[in-house]
Each structure stands twice: as structure tokens, then as C-alpha cells.
Image 1 (cartoon, rainbow, N blue to C red):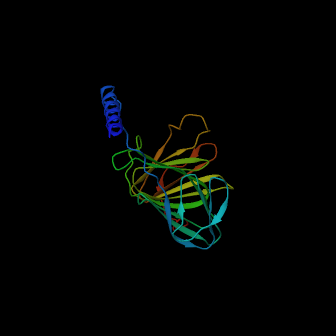
Image 2: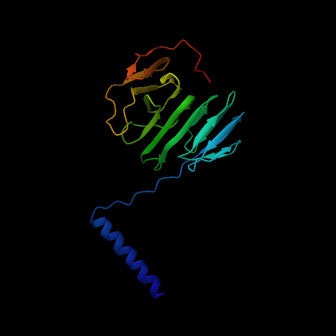
Image 3: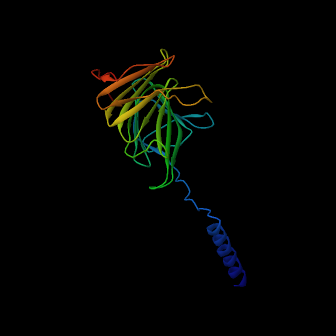
Length: 215
């Protein structure tokens, strides 16, 4: 009994010290993951040990892992915060970062499209500062605050294309690792598309007439 009282006193003193010094006790970030809700054809996941395994409906995918789709194959991933990722055929996308600190805390998402095409349905809200949702390719960075959009990256031509279906997307050229982010960005509104090519060449938004990115 005396031991329990002693421990309680120590915890009370520690709490008072933190309060006096203005040290905040921060809520731990929630572990985030995605759940495969649709799997059609050849869908695999590469884990952080670079092991490639087949997947099925109900399989979980975590930050640091990569989804790979074969020809005529597609997948739908619903993240634990209700954001949805649709992976098209012949695509490869890595979940670089997926962090959430609760409803009021910062949320940071970073997806890396290595090849192919994905469609994002972003249900959560991001302010672009404390909370960010970024879709990256080798040539571009797309930032959103809550929207639905398509991103494609052609590995051969190194061209990135974005089509906004709902809301808006801020698109900017990618910069070399270690350098400051590009200050040149454009806003792609609903129904518009834009592309970024190697050499920081970026097209102005235009009305999207093509259905080549649909699905």
C-alpha cells in the first residue's frame, strides 16, 4: 500500500513540474493503415523489407509499403480515416507517410506515385500548413485540402498529369531532394487538368475533355 502511495506522489509531482514549465502532454498519433476493399486481378504489396506478397480483400496496407497492380488489375483502398485510394492497372504507388493525431491534431499524408495512375477521394480536411495531403511523382507535387482528383505519371516520358473532379488541387514542379520546395504553383479547379514535364515545364490549367484518366 505504501509503495502505491509513493508511486502516486511521484506521478503527481511529475505532472505539476510539467504544468509549471509549460510542457504539454501531446496525444500520441493514431496508427493509420489502409484496407483493401476491392481487389481485381494481380495486386501485390511490397513491404518495408522489400518482400512482395499477393493481396486480397481485407488485407491491410501500412505506411512505408507499396501497392503494385498488374495489367488489367485494379484495387480500392479505404484508409482508416475514410480517405479512399483507387489504384488503376499497371500502377505502382508507395504510402510514404500517413499520420493522424486525432480529430483536432495535425494530419500528414504523403503518397508517391512511381508509375501509372491513381484516383484519390480525400474526405478529411487539410489546411496545407499544419495538416498536409501530398501526392508526389518524380516530376510534380500535388497538394489538396479535401477533394477528388486523378494523378497519372508516365515513367517513359516523365510527365505528370492531374485532373480535378471535385474541389481544387495545387500543382507544382518537383525539386531535387534537399532543395527548397518550388514556389511556382498553379491551382487546378474542378473540371480542369494540368501537367508537369521534366525541366519544370508546367502547363496552364485547361478544361478536361479527355476520359483517358477516368477510373
